[in-house]
Image (tube, rainbow, N blue to C red):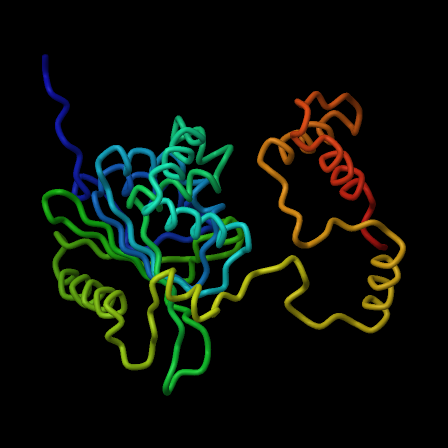
Length: 303
């Protein structure tokens, strides 16, 4: 039997830059690098679990190779992503919870696409993914807004990149660009070493103007800024008044209510069938909640 030769980062023909107007960053960059790397270090201003879903193929190969990824990101997280991260950290100490997560995930590639939050929690629990949260301090009063990353393979080849791209689905819809540096190309090694040193300094919480916290520390210090679906900008007075009238006269899902994956899937299937059909669910699995959530979603937004 012939062994398939190991593919390395330097086997890739990477351009100097990539931009979303001409390239699919998932297909053209992240997927091939994740399939060859054993380590991925990422410093990024915004992270969402949606990025894991669109990179399911690469992450599955990365996990199969025994890869380990470290994220440093700002504490501006979607509530469901935060809960998944928290559950993953708890499962590192709780074998029962870890077993439940592993059972829920099953096939990693399929779970990343269909049950992303469970897969995120499992990958954190199994130390495939590790997250720390960065908060500027001292002379810096804004947000952690870095956007750089490094891939490393088993032979020590490295690729670093930096640009405007955040780890979110929205990042694939924006005009974004990244510059790429390869350790085997002339003049690139010093830049890559600088990025590696920068990441390690942040990861060890040694930057005097940035605090980097472990997730349990972030919980204790209550620094999480949970994203909501509210507008992040001011709206005109008339629009705000219409929105307020709509809020008072139309049903809304309680902000603390979190649907399970199968409930979300049932609602999506119902809408895909033009809001017709019967939802078959076992006793006690939340048919009433699912129906009410579907009814709320069916309401048209205010004009």
